[in-house]
Length: 112
Length: 114
Image (tube, rainbow over all chains, first blue to last red; front, side, top):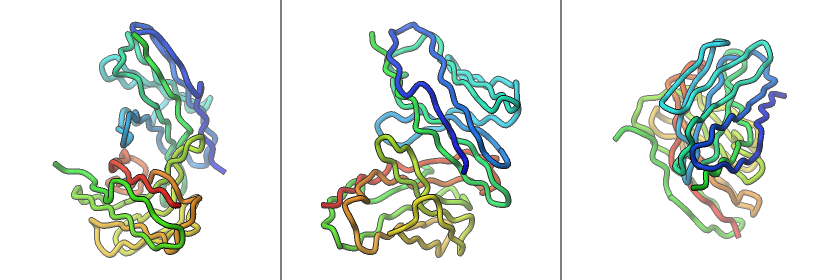
């Protein structure tokens, strides 16, 4: 059975702090790893990673994948209260038809 | 604005009643999905469709059915609702099922079965 595990489950930081969110996985026939941000409603797409060691960056957010050790990290620098959300990690895997398995998410709270 | 529309936004339903959650996308995506999201359990796949005319079962399919008569629409039906189906339901789509494109989500339907 495919597994995606995120840590920590929740995190409280002060504005300006840097945070690192973790995602490890055990899947058959890995295809890609995706990060999403979920505030009140729908998860919104952040990054998709397919190759090890190549950092994806968007503003203060960045992410990298290690396919040998089977994990990814999401970094957020200079956090703001608007970064408060649940961050979801998902892995696409399978053969023929690729399905996504989601982790349970990390709830990030940024306090002023 | 291109995207996924789900209806209704929320619903309270008596146990034993039949309910269809609607999902329409205008991005011409081939693959569509239904997830339920529950506290502590995360997002779990109910059913999926890789292309119009085909459907498949996900992790938690019991009590639910889907159809995919055309590319745009992917309704989810609860034949006889039970309280354990109280959840937030998300419809999602992506260009193909090949795993190299991101999933896009609708805004969800909050369903309460009493």
